[in-house]
Structure formats: C-alpha cells, structure tokens
Length: 374
Image (cartoon, rainbow, N blue to C red; front, side):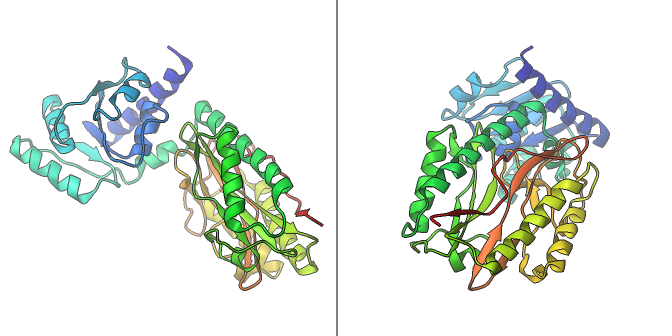
C-alpha cells in the first residue's frame, strides 16, 4: 500500500471507530471538504454539492456525475472507494444505497441542507425504508482537527509560497500604488510561484482602512506614513496557508511602533506558552490580557486564532468560545491585532501546528516591523 493510501485508510478507520461508538450503521457525507479529507482526491471538489458518499463498516461508495467522475476515478483508491455516476438524483441514490445495505441508523452531517434532508426522507419513505438519521454534531470537524503527516506536508509547502510572496511584496510596495494594485501583484506572485489557488480573498488595507480587520481592498493609494495590513494565503492541493503582516511605508511614528510592539508581545508570548491540552479560549485570554495591560485592550476586537486545513476556518477555535483543547496535531493561527478607528490597524499572524512540547509555526517571515521606502 502506498504511503498516501495508508493515511486514507487511517481516516476511514477513525470514522468507523466513531460509528461503532455511536451505534451508526452508516454515515452519509455530502460536505466537499469532508469528501476531500476522506478520499484524498486532490483538486477534484469545488463549491458544488455534486456528490454523495455512504460509508459502512465494510464498504465506502461515492456517487458523482460526469463532470467529476474521470478526475475522481484517477485520484481515488479503487480498493477502498466504489465510484459511480448513475443518472439519478443524489437523494434517490442515497436512499437506494441505504436500502441495499440494510442500514437503519444513518448519521448525517450538520451541514446537510434542509431541502436535501426532506427529499431523502421522501425517497426512503417511497422505498418503505425505516431509517433514523441522527446528526453528527461536528464529529467530522473534530476528526479533521488532528492533521496527519500528509496534511502537514501540504500545509508547510503552501506556507513557503506565502512567505515568498511577502518577501517579494516588501520589494514592490511603494507610495502611489493602490490597495487593488498591491493585491493583484500579491496574488499573481502566489499563483505563479507554486500555489494552485488562493486560500481566500486577500486583505490589503492601508492607513485608516487597516482599522477594519476584514477590510476589502480599495482604490485608495498607499501614502508615506501609512501602516499597511496584508492578510493572505496560498492554496496547494486543497490545503490552505494563512498569514498577516503589517508593514510601514516610511518610518513609523512612536504611536505606530508602540502599538506594533504590543501586538508582537501578545503574539510571541502566546506562541511561547501554548501547550497541548490548553483550551483555545485560554490562549485568547492571555493575548487579551497582554493587550489590556499595554493599553490596547478595547482595540483587540476578534478572536486570537482559528484552525486551518482544507478550510481556511476550521477547528480548533482560539477565541472567547474556544472550549476545545489545542491538542497535538492541531493546526491553528495566532493573530492578535489592534485597530484604532480612523488611524491604522495592526495584525501579526502565523500559522502552525501544536507539537508535543508546544506551538511550531510554519510561518518563517520576520516579526519585526518592516519599513519600506524610508
């Protein structure tokens, strides 16, 4: 068995262990991120819910259509997954497969649409099949939280592209360029230097626009004296990177440097003390306490971090509501920020994995405030 197939087998084994504990006969899967994780089929799934998978203790089936069947066949282990492109609706296929395997307790994902759920109920009723359909309550998200070595390799490679893009942009950015022009150059670099997609719509926010944590790039031209926030990431084989750096156009003022130093202190202290088993909210509370002591507590307006993997936002959560432990193998960001309305914003974000003794960032870009065009 190839090494990649070993990882897929281990993921299915974890799902079947869950089924045994819960008393499920089968699990129905439609979420494309879960399908990517389960099948290992890279660069196949997109935003369309054009697939069903049914997993039992002995079999695993995927139903798709002609737009995806060839690519899915080429990138899926046929010793594990049985594929078809039967010309029926997804609910009809699922009901027929449930009936054929005799499943009577079929767990469904939380993300399953109400319309599909009602259609499936109707198809099961037509087939005279009595079937309980309990919700998984986020179990796939929790299983995906712990990354295996195949996933970590892709995440590290995606981050290398992202780090290279930041170094490039430090040589490119100058007064007079608009936020939109900077975004175009940033994203073009990533796509031409190893990324096969963008992890998300890049944030490029200068001056007062940077005080909006999720600002959209605008036609505003960068000016000397601005702080410029760039939040961006490369995607590689469906796995994402995520980083934020703030740079200064010219020499920073004392106020700008003071706020930056506070954010850097919060970031580096959180990264230093993070340990396996620590709750996500505990790490957030540490960052909030440091920024409060530095005089910027009311200007830290979002959670400290979030999980990253196939989705740019997944478990675990390192925020006020982060009640899950940051266990070994969990990949997440640390990204404290300070946002002064009408003036500027600052965010410093790394992405990394919780190792056996602490947090190990993938990000290699420096933490010091970089000034360009001094």
